[in-house]
Length: 119
Image (cartoon, rainbow, N blue to C red; front, side, top):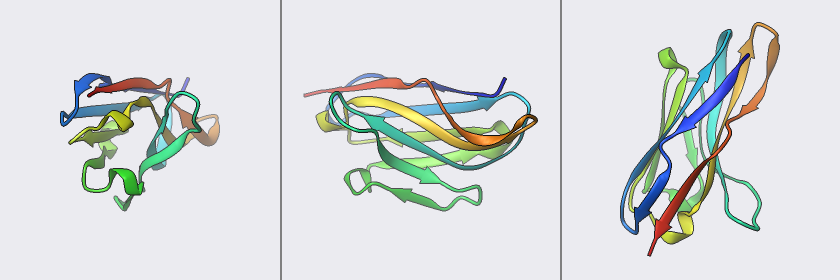
């Protein structure tokens, strides 16, 4: 079974930092674009940052200069380093990946990890 497992969420004060990790496991042949999304209560799920297999990145305007997405292809893992956190960053963060595996291919989602920034 192929799955994405996230870790690293938690409670932090304004201005603090957190690092999220998301590891893909299972019979994986390759992984294309990976990304992080977030969903605050009562709001839609929005893209935070994405990274292609060759390392090209894109960010939501609200996190540019504060968040950094990276990946370790040998570990099938994507990271999100979040600095200078603000209360408005509070949300459930989900990772997402376009995965090619033994049973086919498709977009997978992690289970989500809560990030709470206190003022």
